[in-house]
Length: 311
Image (cartoon, rainbow, N blue to C red; front, side, top):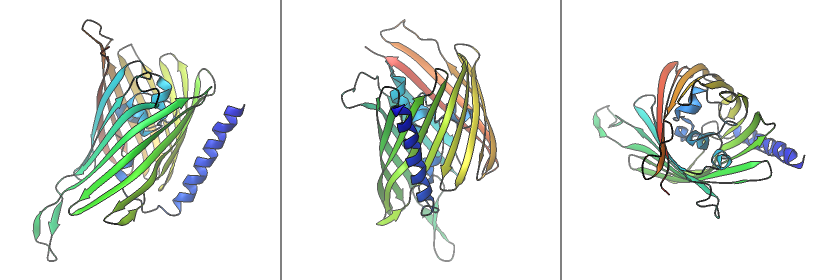
């Protein structure tokens, strides 16, 4: 009972924080932090606060890597081309639970965002040449498991370069997971709490809150739902995934945000575990597409990973 009260109190505190922040962060920068790239989560409409499994979990609920209590290493990378010659690439390295248990370190993440074909112009409109614009975020994920509640957080260092200007900052993500029953799990997270400075000026970060539920209706069927509040407004995310076999999974979802509604579709493939070499290994590939939304366009996302144990 005390744990349940703690979980509800955490939700209340996070909700209060986000509503307080909304009044002062309507012009938040570093929007690339909100761009999703990992395909499994996007395949189910972005409803991943409670499902929170694999590398996708770091970008929806940082308690995920701790809950999995994995025995193997997991290296994954994802990529997405976005609007107007922008692109984002992310990489995640998940550690076995026992490896760094004394310091509770669970994962390392790297995000890289770049804008291509960006040019300088003089006052009369003459093109002077190209200029650089990129962002980098490096994060360390930590967590611990209580009697029932799992808590996780990610600390990130942020760097930005725009032409002759550079920016630095720090941000933190925090999340909790709580098994309501054997088949229902609740999750909540606050993302992008921190400070950033560009050329000496303070830039507000795109603060977000997510709360959701995952229903494991069958050993091969999972239904998920999330509520999200951010600096643009609120939205809902719904989705499901069905494992048609041990190697293949299909996904579908829908979300409705301040920018409009969108539907998503996705598939996932994983090889069967291989033990015919010096170390165990298993590979994963996920693809997702989304159509509609803020830009009324279709976006494609793909990620790949390998789970291995060299010991």
